[in-house]
Amino acid sequence: MEYKIYDEKILKEKLETMTGNDFAKAEKAARLEGDVSIDIMTSRMFYAAIAARAFNKPLPDILELPLKEFAAITGDVGTFLLAPDAVKVESSTASGNLP
Image (cartoon, rainbow, N blue to C red; front, side, top):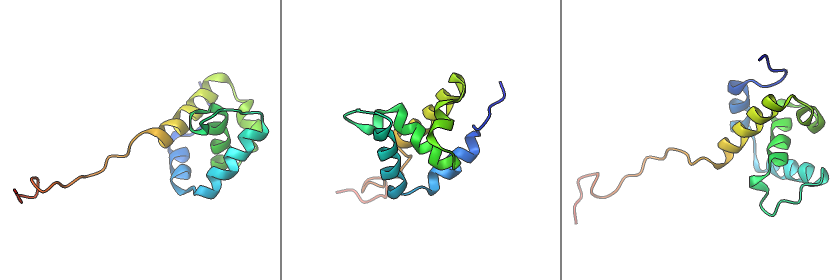
């Protein structure tokens, strides 16, 4: 299937440059569309609003995508926001400093 907007690499690059301001504006857009989720971080409408900002498109353009493309985009946004980052943790024992 050929996607109209979705490009995984470009989406990830754009998401990495976004700020809290983008988050707040996307939440407002999702709420204006009628999203009443208690936790906006679990909302596909919010993920669509984040994607719209990332791709510099109006939110309705994202909402009107074919279902598979919409699911791919919003799934990647959700994963980006919710998946833990790999963080290197140094413990005292790992560095050889035993108590």
